[in-house]
Length: 278
Ligand SMILES: [Zn+2]
Image (tube, rainbow, N blue to C red):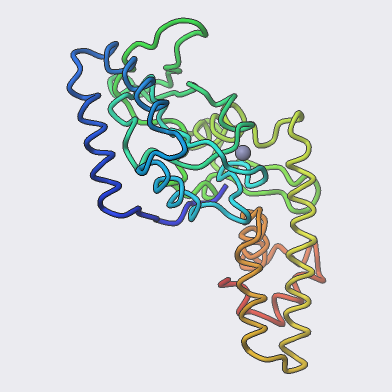
């Protein structure tokens, strides 16, 4: 999971969202707002709704590859997902900044899972209601979940490119940041989960694919292939799925830890340092 590019839909789309949101905000009390947020969102988030057709188009620009989920980077993104769940935060149900495009495999289990560091005590508190019960207004506090619209998830974790292709938390154990990373990567999004072994495999395959593309680029550059062809190769690489894997390949080289695990790839980056900025 990477920090997402800052994409904005047209102003008229933002204006419609604001108008939809006003209907929710004008309800009296949290329960009424939460109930209306749910029905109003599902009524509008449909094919043919002009606003949501545009919302989805804009969200697609945040996705890698062929509209891959922003969380797992693997499956097709086909659900408009609320970072702050709509039941718990009805005041954000039509907030553009609260949307990402995700797959059902990520979004389903995430559901209403959410936690805050309480403003009054700083304590971690899960705020999702037990299954089958109604949401109650969460206490004030800072979100625990890492928000890829705002935060850089790769400041919290590193992908192990040597063996496991799993995320390893790089923040000090016991710190708030460690808690945020554990909650986000393991508990809510399950990006390392054994049931999602296919994600680990897909990251490993992406690594091989990125490396092959880099090698092919260097070959074409060195035999004097036309610039237009080279540009197209760079463009294709940048649009591939699993962008986290590519970012990590670059980061390992920049941190001088790549040679220990893959001397061959390290040499490729030395031959094409321009690739460190792709
Ligand atoms: Zn996903």
